[in-house]
Length: 571
Ligand code: FES
Image 1: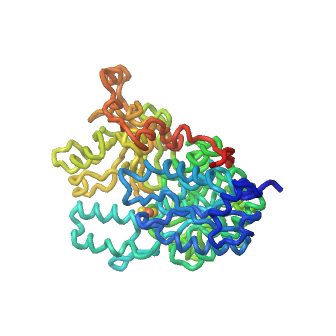
Image 2 (image 1 turned 45 degrees about the vertical axis):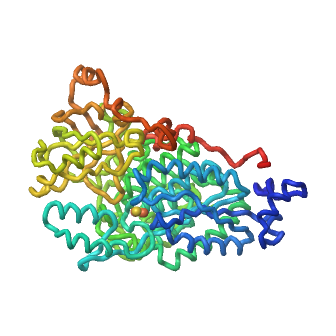
Image 3 (image 1 turned 30 degrees about the vertical axis):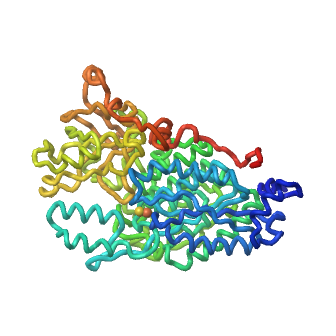
């Protein structure tokens, strides 16, 4: 058996071992330093991340499991990101959270780690960190909140906010009723209950093999979450003994399974950048084309908002994530293992669907092909994506004249201007929202429709942007356009009235402007020059090093793993 990592701190009788042990004692028995696995609980609980505020309770159950299995639990509060609060966008801080967690895992006497996340960026950042350090790690997703109800019908976080606010703008819902819905929407602990990014990433963490099978999607207030948290603590200790690290669990094969799952659940487009970033940390060659190729024939089986009508509590009641995977078992890679050491597919045998309207059988999907489509063309030479399942079928092949907005602020200032030259066939273009340009790549691509068109009954238009879109949003939205405008992409040269062609079936996104004309527009200054570069702090580091969305928007110097070894003593 190889030496336990924490023994490098605690073993022996010299002065250094004395220093490491003595300060950690505080009532802890000597046996704690005699080869018992030291298991960190990387905890993103924070009052400012309300979706994760209950994770301290979850951590207690994890602790019990760790003790029970003979390990030593160590609470490790890590950077937490509350999606609805953090400015200018939580995505700006995902890589910082991942980097800080990575370094704290490396710096401390830790043999394994249980990762507690929930709100959108927290599970991705934790997995990026654990993948980089490559010590035994597993995730306990904090789980979704219970269904909200309003006026007798379910109310989903996010998705219904967009719908209700559009209704207010269209004049079909009073502001008073709109405000009344606010307290009905968020009625329990947990993260957003639609198939948004948090739900998606919790489930995909399980598809990747990093969660005890059957746990992801358990609602936050459900006692079974604590039971599984306890079990996760036990398993972390076993994983240390087995030397089962993220690089053994998260493989190209498990990304294959995650991409199949992403399509079958109708998951968030944000999963694309997060999975690419996690793969980058492990040196796995995952590309945008893998998403298109692997997801292409996968049917949409989960009838959850925003693509359908139910919420996460319903998915759990209907049989849960494993019942979904059971329907597409033949599309999954049978060799990809989970944190238990057993293949994911070995957990699917006895799974059943209990409500066939929530989880559809393979023969009766909501949509036959639910994968994310990757578009190329002069507007996106290195790729852009669209989620056809969330789009209007009649707009998937479209040509229209561009109406350009330079920034989110410009959009908000002019979108409802009665004099804005726009009609239902126009293509709304928003730039300055990529990783460098904003900076941080906010969820603004599903830009609001012009009020005057909403009043005419228009409910969807083709929109093109270099930013992201909330997983709870919907519409015919081309997003993650690369290169972004601020990195010299053609998106920065589009002018009002230019023709844009979207052909999802042909996977094309083109700007119909002659090359000579574009050359003239490039001189004297491109839009890229108009962006003011940050001068200090994380933003400066981020803008100087962030990669484009097609590579996962990670920092270039964080690609690859750091590994668990830190040779130098602290004193
Ligand atoms: Fe936290 Fe939606 S705001 S998951």
